[in-house]
Length: 387
Image 1 (cartoon, rainbow, N blue to C red):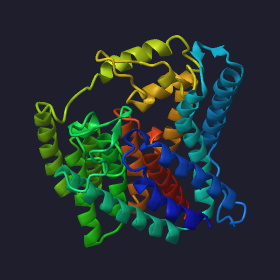
Image 2 (cartoon, helix red, strand yellow):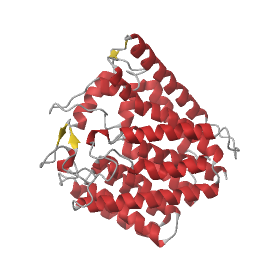
Image 3 (cartoon, one colour):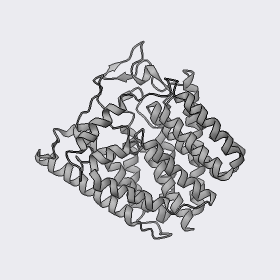
């Protein structure tokens, strides 16, 4: 049953959206992720376990995040109190905790997947990810030429119809597929495209190239950097004669890209990062609370409010403090110390590394489809390693 639910989720999660409701592109995906996650956990009681999985660092992380979730939500929200300067003013602040709930749910799903999925199912699910990502990639490339746009002239943005003139992301870059944002769509494709490297087949190499083309089409640095770094590492490990020349060319291309404003832009990130670090100093050990970054209403020089720090390590530091970031570091050290050059296991390790690279400049752990890709990579790697 777990296998069937995962198949449906792989297909639904990237594609489902509310037509022309530009500001709601995330909510429907998160709802489906949560429903499927609860179903997977429930199904685990009926499935026969293939293996027992225990991960001490991950267990401590789940416990710590759950405690922070309860502390900052129940006390502040139910009694209207203030904890460490964070005030939960109304029910709309519940939205701030949804990504956190997704992560806690995702960690529990991870354990269920590892314990109930076998090697053959891993390969079947990985192929399905490849097909879905190829469709998304083709869609994004077509959108570069203003074909098959998801949000038409009647799309709602900032509470109003866009009319003849697109605004915000709709105006600057409409290569968003069904993900809803160029940077996030690119990040999804950059990570999911590397499932193709599991299969030594021509069609999967074509799918892989389409993924690279989709990342280029987004014109976003974080997604393109993630894809290129992962590709270079793979080539250097398995095809060194090709990898070394491409590494040199890639480095030169990267230096040239710094002069190309469409690819390289801080987008006021540094300004927000400085404010986040200053806020973290007020509660250095336990952080300001899960989901509290958005409540702080950090704004840049243009007056734009930032819901995320666009740097997961920094946002985790702000929200969970040194304790939380320390446990996350423990999880990563425990994960990467078991690196093996077995191709299948290495590719899934590479995908997690790509997610780590992407997280320094984006917020992949706050987006359900990307979180799901990372959960699959982590879980599949543990399954293949054990087998």
